[in-house]
Image (cartoon, rainbow, N blue to C red; front, side):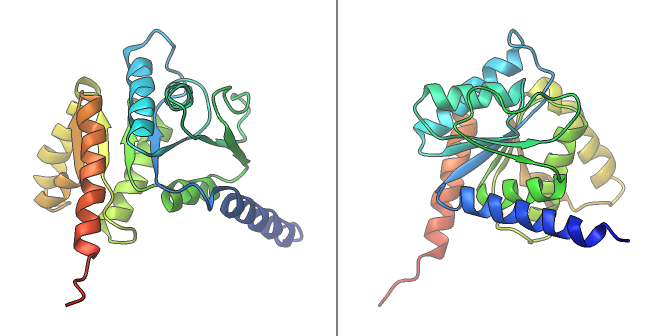
Length: 216
């Protein structure tokens, strides 16, 4: 009761810091994935490739700033000469931002960090991961499905890993009437980094055309 007002001030300060640090990023895509992925894992290499591919397509790369897949995406972005953002979270088992982050913020509150991902990203690439990655995936999917954010692309990278989940979504969620069949189309699944980046670029171009209003 007596500490809550001060907690509100801490929350407010995190929003202010996030808005101030990220306002000038321009086009950006969030890359999600496991912090536990070792450097010799195929998903690590995929994340490096997608980080570099997004930079070459003109995007800033945003990750959670930690090790594993996040580090790999930041590494790919940095080595491709792009802006590499890390939105870290204070956890007892993570040792701060990885070395490839060149714009970094650490958050105490997950919900503030999540808002920064959503506010400053116009696409989401999701590589293999655990509970946190699933949370980020379904948070983004819920916001797109309900129209709370613009219908940005959500790409699952890794068919072997994500295929069983999508089978369950179609077979159980659609089959039981828990979601509409067209909701499945909000997510795309691929193993191809070039295809992943191409989908994100195409959706941006399509949004640009739909926003265009002729003057005559």
